[in-house]
Length: 235
Ligand SMILES: Nc1ncnc2c1ncn2[C@@H]1O[C@H](COP(=O)(O)OP(=O)(O)OP(=O)(O)O)[C@@H](O)[C@H]1O
Ligand SMILES: [Mg+2]
Image (cartoon, rainbow, N blue to C red; front, side, top):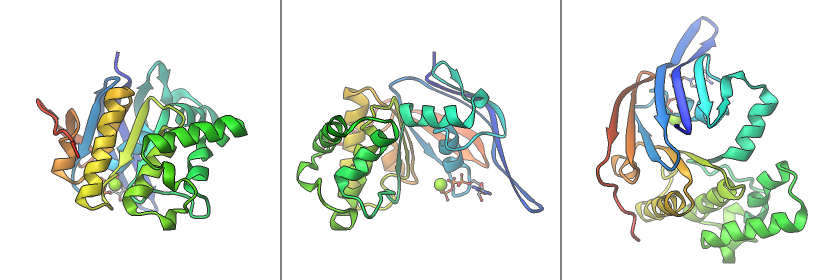
């Protein structure tokens, strides 16, 4: 059974008289342990799709099953619970809280989950160390490089051991060396921890670190490409 299963998903935005069909009948399945990339022109619905998969946004019509749960049937409260327990997010612009240190940023999702002080700190330190940031824990985001900030954001995304990691243009703000480093981390998380990864990217090369590419056009899947060979991010 697929981990993520979308059937005939649409998303309609209405602003005044203008209607935008951001998603126009999306069918897709993602298996547990897959690493997939979503590509497509600007405005084709990539971020909207990722937000639906991540339960940040509800579709207008269609059905979405995440594991055993029919997501379109649950309340907002249950939705935020699913999001908090099963999904980690990474964004192009990192979205770290500027007034908090790396460690405090990584502790945040555990605070929302009610994990208490000492245990919370231990898990956050472990996540940061696994991303080779053990010596940067007490730095503020402004005191870190872009690549380091993205690694803190990944630590924050995985500290709660989610089954799915969603990334919207995770390398969009990074140079090629840091981008390679992020892909190497994603491949390790995918292979050794079995985390399912869905990333949006504009870069063909970045897309090839995954197993599959979904190509979007005008809110529809135009093509699914299964990659025989993944690029290996060996640094
Ligand atoms: N909150 C919103 N309200 C109204 N329209 C929206 C909203 N979010 C997205 N849209 C519209 O939906 C369409 C798809 O947007 P989306 O952000 O998913 O595109 P994208 O593929 O991620 O583009 P990009 O590559 O530029 O990030 C666009 O036409 C956009 O204008
Ligand atoms: Mg986008």
